[in-house]
Length: 275
Image (tube, rainbow, N blue to C red; front, side, top):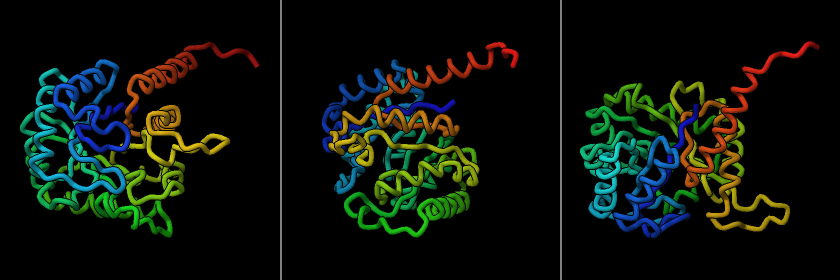
């Protein structure tokens, strides 16, 4: 069954809820709430990666993230840390984090592979073409799915060579990162192609801009009003045995997955009527 990864942005500038959980206590409460709603994993980030975002320094990122990680782990929650920095990853892993969710796929910090290989943790390698401030200038592809898969294959080979074990690796096509809306739709349509990599797949579509204007009037909805569209993507991913979906609306996603599971179970139990 596809797992649900809930999002805790300990940032002032994330595209959906920037500033809402910047306070450490508020971030911890939110993470605990997401777990209570059924999140299998809580993903904690201290640096916005929205298009155009500027980087924060390593000390600021770690100061935002580590206390939240420590408290959530103490509460028995499986924690992922959204970071591109080896130093932040090391501090988070020392605080008990279980997963490093690296949107750069190890390219932003060459020391990340060393840190991950020394720990019993998972590492999400995302397709990446540069930092947020400039990434949307790198959206040229001839065949987006083929090129993303090839890039991820190269990253897998590279981190294996650095000592990272296969069982640690998770891949992410990077919806919205150096992608146009059409690229995102194509990647979703061709999700089954990623099976050739042979690794679990994480999808992060929640509230992203390509889901903003889907109605007949094409009105651009603000991020918090994109949950229904995000949920449709999550259900689609679950039908394709994606390992996990990264979402803001955990309660809605968990309920939708339960409905799908109950229908499937009832179908298996129902007697076959004569033709």
